[in-house]
Image (cartoon, rainbow, N blue to C red):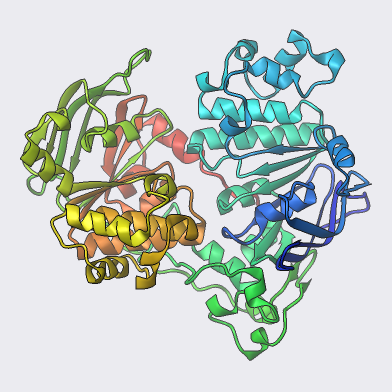
Length: 590
């Protein structure tokens, strides 16, 4: 890290975390420092140790885990004494979590929850209103409850609660993962402004590299519980000195062009103890040699204010990363024959809502075509998809799938309804909540195969797993024993078990690491080709929609603002709303 003459507000040296019961090590030799007014992003795939590092820094490790090393916050050593830790939290350091809805009490008014963090003499309506104004909310929000607020407003309230004790250190764990691109931009701008005005030290945990490099002065890259690389964010992005950092950046889909294949990192992050005595990334690295497996590489200087734990950092410094191949933009298939899915004038209004969720939407998907739907939360994207598969009943309009027309899918005769449901399947954002946690993967897939009229035997389950890039032995595992990317592959396998003609993906890659996201996008492209399947792809990530769709519809408040070929819409948008979406994409700091 770049450390000036001032004493850092966060100073972590030689942090190690292990299990008391079996002596297993989960994290070791992690060091970093953050000065007042500066920001640090901690990045890496799931399992790299990001959240564990922060929990150990704050003394928030769960029972059974033990931390060692020197940790100082605002000049005060962090001990395991509960009273000492309570004294630090709130007034010295505060934590902003990914989902404020789980942090906030849904039954208590917002104002009372902000007041909990204020000093006793400051718990006045005027002070609460001032705190709300600081995060861009009006005073009347104090009388509302969290469930009455949008996701962006809840995150602002969460930030107001985190700042109520006037901390000098703010730590945010994936604060914008569940937010659409415009709300994400607003929240990030708000955090950046408040941090600058208050001169706080800021630590950001994120798997979104665009967010990391747009928000941070410095970056700490973790892998398998060890430091892979550290340095100024702009320098690390421009010229990474570790193969893992380079691979992560390569897997980030570009917004300005379509790639033939999105580079992904093979395999998954190993456990810390599984790669002791060697480079943890060696098994996934194209540059690995004997030296990489002969001892654990320690972080060493790799430029001004930079370190790298790679024995070949000098090779990386001398060679530019290979540019991924740019693919020609697809020729849109709209109007080239009968539609597979056609939606006309679709209307859906929820009880008590001030406006319709869908206000006369028209949409068309041709056979084998990939169509994207983008827009902010509340734009109607998911409601439209749920109407197609019968999870919502529209109030007006018509849906025609493969020659069968319906409004309410449940009102169709049983045979026609079954044919539609075999022909269109849906993959949801969170595979863990859509898969039965007590049933094995094999049982889940066998059931899907039998529902499609096949025998669902072991051979068919194994073939289905192979189709989505999973080994046959995965069949015996429960969803809880798998990574997020593996679970999403299982969810996709279940959806394609009956060889549907249309697959609807509702934010199916938004919660995944950038490298796993690349794997899933490449998988969907392969399945679309091999199964002659159309895609209806819902996302708030415009770079992702560039990579996988032929045409795109832009929705806002239940209306279609514009539609057309994906490249044309993203390169030359005609609607101000689309231009605002594009302007909200995080841009790395120069």
